[in-house]
Image 1 (cartoon, rainbow, N blue to C red):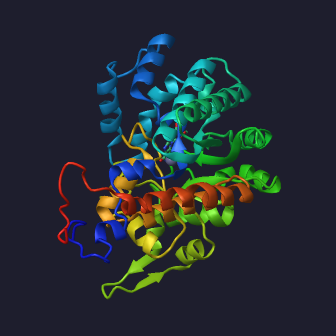
Image 2 (cartoon, protein in one colour; image 1 turned 30 degrees about the vertical axis):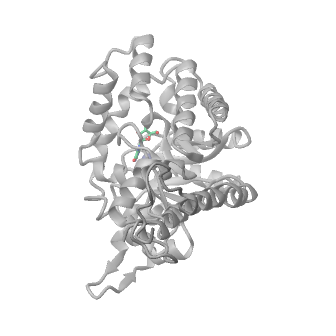
Length: 395
Ligand SMILES: O=c1[nH]cnc2c1ncn2[C@@H]1O[C@H](CO)[C@@H](O)[C@H]1O
Ligand SMILES: [Zn+2]
């Protein structure tokens, strides 16, 4: 039933359910917990930074073609091949100026897309090739985020960006990076993460880093349950004590959906749901690395129904050619999600953020809920076209 044919007194389905338009999705206040700084550069910025720094290994120098190259190369069906593309973005992020610029543009791009709160991660140890220290890397990225927040505000968007410091799971610097995250915890860094190829690199190799952060009452997430299944999730939670799961999508392997519609959760899946462990789900990225076959078959559909603490994220906007709005659009198309569903994901994200509880609550009650309420009420104020008569069946 369309709005034109709805009898008076009946809220038409497409507005009552608040099926959002792409424009509404973009304006909706969104929360992003899993986004890699080195996975979100503008293609044009990669080209310019490569030219300015003498980086000669880019496969394309036309921004349009380079953007397509990243997307296609990352569309490989394997996490390992997906990760190879980062050589080029990391390759051009080796000076203070480059890091400030990339972080500034990241904050601006997210704000433009309607993201109001983001935690953006990167691995400081990967940006030392031209002599920067770990501290200089963190301070450059922080400076870029602050500049981006200011510019966004001047452009009419409000965003807050926190940094997560990632340690690479195949390397051996995790304790050092955890200590770095702890030193900057009151200066823009809100937590810690480990990333990189999952198979063969269990999170328990970095126990000393996690135990250190726990002793410091600090927060961390762990990439787990993306390319590798339940053992990785189990270790991340029960050995390492992760606050959140980066991806965690393979928790679906511990959920049995029976033909009669009933569902049985295994012990680990029950634990994740009962303890409200946030899942940083990244649908498009999962399609590229082979962790899910299609949007419609992505486990997020069932996890949302079962009320897991599911959140929606971009992972790598450049490699996955996506944005928060794009991720939401894909889910709206696949599952018919309404503005209420998108609000649910956004509130889940904000509840799961690593900033203090009072700030999270205020973001939810003063920014996110009012933002969705505004969008949900728009239909009440729609005007008939001034140039035509009403097309309403009741005139
Ligand atoms: O989805 C992912 N899974 C595991 N590692 C990742 C993913 N996306 C990016 N990185 C890795 O994290 C580093 C720091 O940002 C990137 O350089 C990339 O190697
Ligand atoms: Zn990731």
